[in-house]
Length: 98
Image (cartoon, rainbow, N blue to C red; front, side, top):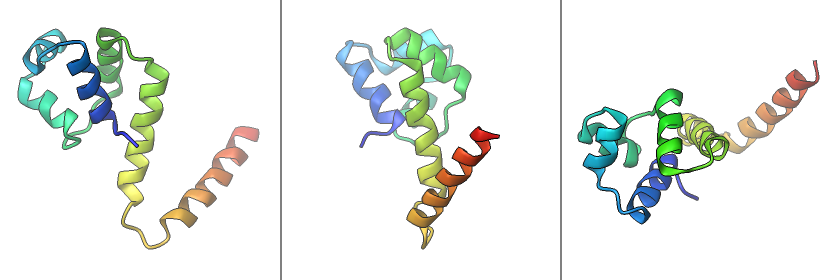
């Protein structure tokens, strides 16, 4: 499974873009982009949209990865992580049916 950062880095590299070039297009510092790619810093949804447009990555797919990364990092070390996810899924389905 790939993280959002890994997807961004791999796509950027496949397109032959250097970090500094993509960072310039995003109007951010190269060090910040590097942290995004290493999953050391969270990306805003607005910046994620810009990245998806520049790298031609489907935004909805990238957003799904972004949200799943967020949840996984939040509960990864909880003793009952799998149980938490199962109950959360039931709650999401309930809330959507209201």
